[in-house]
Length: 339
Ligand SMILES: NC(=O)c1ccc[n+]([C@@H]2O[C@H](COP(=O)([O-])OP(=O)(O)OC[C@H]3O[C@@H](n4cnc5c(N)ncnc54)[C@H](OP(=O)(O)O)[C@@H]3O)[C@@H](O)[C@H]2O)c1
Image (cartoon, rainbow, N blue to C red):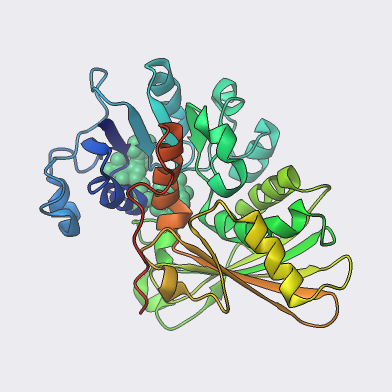
């Protein structure tokens, strides 16, 4: 069994990771940390884990803790304080934060507002989107798990950029549930503020913008100019991204469908079908993609994921499966909720 530790276990993605790991046939959850809830039973903080996780939160990962794999469900800026020592101990790491996603320290400084303190390992990190970078993940010791919005937008559009079928401008209009903002309430995620409203935020400034661009430029054949507008909508889980592009040449629906089917033929968590729906993927590791032509060359691609699962913990476990030579869907084969 792969012995697993989760750092940041009291938060949303930490809890979601525990939900995946506690029933995983090849993983054993041996420690979860929380600085503020150290000593408290995990199942007291996360009652849905009662009967599945019989641990108390540890203050921190002890130097002697015997683990093979660490999931860092910690904020950006914190992960890079934990990664160097974990790697030195030979532990494989999947970091759910943004600390190791952008290749350039300069770009990290620009979008995250702090200097990168672990450039050596930044250069070794593999961007963990299995549908695009599966082979690189197999030999990685450190995987940068993609952000939730980039997962949705990049999976929606990568087949088009990889095959050179669209012009270099991508407009992403995205809606997310409030769990994307983490366990600590803020003014915009406070229930009375958001429960009956829809709010755009960080327009033109969201730090997932360069991540979307970087991933698409890596699989594609040129520069991609990304305009990304996120919105907070009154649901808890889920992201819907509506992506607008211009085809280089006129194509019909059937040819586009074949492009997607071929690109994702080895990707068990991609479903290309009619109109994507958040409820279909909620609680699951699936990404649903659909598209429509709106005029001769205007293409609208829609995609949905659960931000905590495919956009966070599920994808993290999928990456870990690949890092340990398991089938990528081990422990993740369950459908979404549907309603
Ligand atoms: N929410 C999502 O949908 C989503 C999706 C994809 C990726 N992510 C990313 O995943 C990470 C976690 O997100 P989240 O939404 O789960 O956040 P969260 O709910 O706020 O949880 C963060 C956790 O990290 C712990 N923590 C904070 N600072 C720490 C430090 N310096 N050292 C160790 N532990 C620390 C906190 O507990 P204590 O303070 O008690 O230690 C808490 O358990 C973030 O980087 C986020 O951007 C989130």
